[in-house]
Image (cartoon, rainbow, N blue to C red; front, side, top):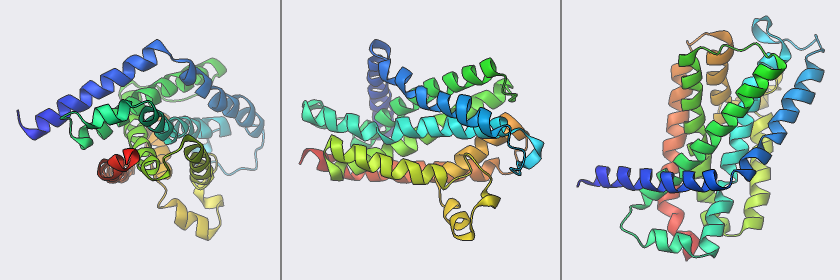
Length: 258
């Protein structure tokens, strides 16, 4: 068996093991849906009545933020994935996993894929909530499939970043703190809840390097505008970010048990 085949097989096996954990205890995932639900039901509904916000394309505000809320919910799931890795280190599971013949790249990819599964769950919940409250989105099957692909890549990207940080921080308390410190600037420094044109010049420049901006752009093109002209750029930026963070996590993961 060649290295790519062995790595792919190991990654899928690890992802399947992580998915079984979700099936046996999905409480955390249900709790994670509370925050995005509040964003849509309260924040979105209130600001939907403010007509002074220049929303591109003439869409309502709640339509505009629905893809941003979806991206935010996936971000929150993925960025705290490092806490799970630290817990696995504490109970000895990570040491056993790293002692197997599975390449470290496969371990990182497998766990990142598991974060993608969690992200899909969040996507389904946001779609269901949008339908219930009457948010008018484009639910074309190909567009929805494209959104789920973006969700998986995005979750893999930030789960890998979280694993990288966990390798240096090494405690759950530190991971909780850094997770909060990262997610809030990423969220408010993107186009998730307001157009980039409303930002000051320096923040517009920062948003160009924010992966969340490209994720939200991709989701809006598929769920709202139907304009796919910027989609290749969005996907390329997301792929590059994901590959970079997976590579970083693969290199430094062993530091977590040292």
